[in-house]
Image (tube, rainbow, N blue to C red):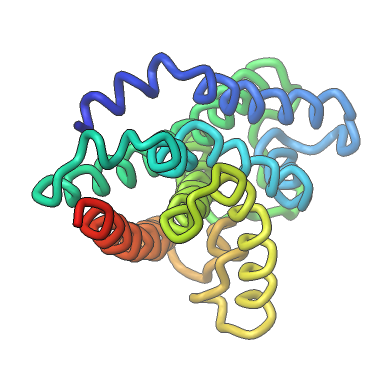
Length: 251
């Protein structure tokens, strides 16, 4: 079933719409030239720090697959194709496809855009302007592209987590609007709460920026652990709810 969903994703216009949407926002940001003169990495950090862009990225992440379960449930596809024995496989396939598609939708266009920008910028990578990012040691080591990969991978993981949160809510309230729109609302509310009330190790907004006082490896593994762990928690809740729904529907 997972293979079938991957095939569906590759042929889905929503996947490409999400990727183009993320890349398009990067282009809009670049065209504005609001921060002309800074290096590429600092400029892209500024982009992610703009609340409107960040929330739009989360919506684009949810676009390809977060609403798949609600669409299939409302059209009776779920109960027509799934028996109680394979409800678990069905749910896990939905969750996995949602997570991976959301990760790819954000990660690929961000990395491609910053890589292209670096080829044309006057100051591609610099640590002399006083702005030291979480992975700047890679710049010092002469491998700045690793900073791009690590920084945007962990940020994309956070977007994927919010996308599967939307799918999880849609298991309780089967609506594509909830599946795609709730990550926008929840991310704003929960990130604000964790930023103001919890230590930095649990600050989801800060973690999406890899803002931790650890080494590059420590930051990467910790943020990956948190976002993947929270995503798996959503996946467990989603799976249990889907199994219960299928069981009740089939009697």
